[in-house]
Length: 481
Image: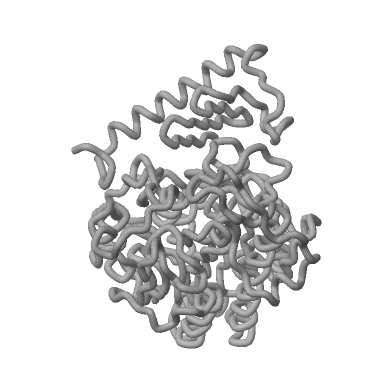
């Protein structure tokens, strides 16, 4: 018996030592920009995405995954904080509207606009800062969109390295917005790579980061592509499409004609703009180029024997627009229909028990990222911070249903509220209704008249949420306090 006791004690010591020595998982978070719900090659719509198809085959594809806002800036703030836009203070876009009507700013004018001086409240704790106590090295390469002044930039908020552009969009080749250079390396603007397609640059920096850190220390690599967002150049022919390298356009059927005259273009009419067919081709080419970059990241991690111990998460920041395919969902980017807020999402982490070739329809959101990644890193979420998400790993491993029962969206006067299977939509009073998402994910059959009690319940839950957000400690830049 004594020998058995000693043997068991030695075994327990060995197991505890092995667990203590188990490496913390790396994290690769890839976010595309305005990609449609149906825009994965594995779904059969003709788009070419072998790397994303590989991720789906080796991981779990989420079909009921939502972001917190139907456009860029607030969605990105939420995925980094784990907090609703109305709680973290970024509940609208940090951008200028004048260029939509042809306004070309001088650099001096641009420097004092809201797009240049607005930013995320400095009290907000974002993912890299939360992971830093666990020894994580963090890099971001791509679209930041949460403030351009030095105090708001990524390396002032917890990231160790940054290369990318700081506002909502740029020309893919010149990296300019309104004619002003917008690319930064850490805290300083740079024009070192002007003329090179953005996706190639973000791929280069991500691969450099992997070479530097894979196997040396746990890392958090955030790659927020601007693809396949429309170009933010002002020239109508460029702005009306997505820029993409010719070799990726050549992978798709030829289009004729490429352009047409638009007599009612919003500025500088009549204007030469890209045709609808060419816009879809360009959009798909930009996605395929991005997919190629993702494939190289996966290959690099695999070569370094780090892939299975890396949490790889991919999703779009909001619903698709331009040449996107959001089928079978209704609506698009900017709207609170499902097509604006439900997005493609894939998670791969075999070492964490996420099974391959799975499709998971659990109700999950981008608010779950921070608490889930903190749990995977073995650390507690930030103290004294109210989070709106939870640890999703038991749900992704198939051990329990999603704890999420509700989700709410507010973009100015557009509303969305999901409670269980029911969704209430109010599109500025012009359209909307009550929908059973389980039976009708395309939101075609308005049940408001036949289920008034359900509508009243969902609206009451939304009212409670609004009250909770208004009672939260106020955050800038939009709140009045």
